[in-house]
Image (cartoon, rainbow, N blue to C red):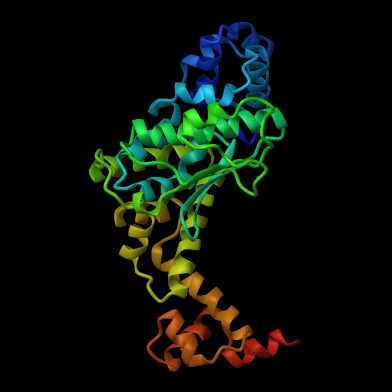
Length: 338
């Protein structure tokens, strides 16, 4: 199988929409080498290239000018696999969205999500990974509309969006269809494809929040992710390392604080390290060493380095650096200048 793929539940959303529009989906599946029995296995996946080709065929056969928007009406939690159930049990919208980058590959590799704070709103960006222009437009519209409707119908969110943006150009048809879905007209040909979320909605408690259930669901999702691809599981650990570097630079790093930032328990955090053959302390030591070398190269004074890396005094830092590198800081800088 290709290293990039899509889940059967993700494909089903577009098949269901096409069937409702009268498309003979069975013949399209056969022409792309997919037996209908394969759709019965929600754990199965197909290559991303095949997924894209099938969706293009469905869009073309439907003749629907807003196929992506229409497909968003056929979303349900099972189509998001474990990610759908994890999101329902999240404590807040922020907690829900921050979990998406780690687990969205369980749905498929069609794109990846990023949450960015702007001056007037939070931007939930979707970076589409598909190549075909037709597929990119309709799947991007389906993803954003599905997110929005999922938030309203499944998470119980209230209020209007601050806006919607798409990278693709506006269609030559009536834009009122977008107004009907998003309660606003999107801006087209923008830098990002994104929902603009009101900041005051980000940390409101979700009605279905269930920390104990989410903990169990995350443990199951971690197993699925490891089974799908050990490499992708490692990528999840890289996300943890990135958070650690950010917190260490702010002087706020602790195991419990890191777990809170990742919206998981300390036990789940420890399990993720163990599954990667590492530990929190090993990761912290590695990151401190890398930051120490960077700060030394930048000629930051030893007292400031101690404050940033959490050492009580320069002597403790110098001793630890010698253990890490086998060199004193002076020898390290001398070698760097060679």
